[in-house]
Image (cartoon, rainbow, N blue to C red; front, side, top):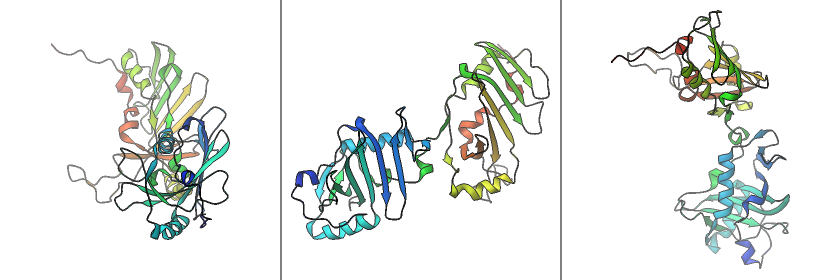
Length: 327
């Protein structure tokens, strides 16, 4: 990846890591010697994509752009150690090509952290150079204590945007929740207007009267939901095969105002430790904090948290009129 290059007299260029105009950055290419790569680029709509497949995490992109903008030289690596640093970066470093308005602007080679853990050894290559410069520098971000190495990762699933639902109540046409085996507790909500709803159980019983505020609150729960971890890749296939042999315990089906329907199926996740017990000493049959979810025609698979998605797991009883508070 990095070869010991010719001596450069352009000392200023060798140390010019910063990219002040990050708004013009529209493409990044990451690679290492092990063959791992990640292509990040803006599409025609201005959305950053990972490997031309999925929207990329906005927080991770913004962190990289901030890194390019604020990074500055801490000190040159000791002259006696330059050759060793070059070899280390060549073997274990990460190459990052930075493109601005479609043209290669500069290339960073990211090595390991400095001994004080407050900087990172890096090497630079200009757009008009066929090889990197030969001076390794320790770089830092003012005010930040640590290394920038973790920001340059190449696992596709870690780059993927984790938000999967951002549906406001006014965009929802119908929601149904199927608590498998309990049709009287399962329900369906038809949205007929801003304050007009029909609520029925999946066994066909109409819930009337119902608490309108509870319905509105429930619909608001779909505005900001994420997966904790994507498993829709090779690494997740063994887990997917295992889950495929089990039945989902709950399914939520959403239809929006454009008549697009999406089903979300939830599966219990084994406990982190097989010896976990509850407060009464009973063995915990499944992970109480996380679960598996399949969606988008069962093509997507991930781990979701009970703390964020669990608020959707209500029963039909949730929508019954609330008893007035006793005075």
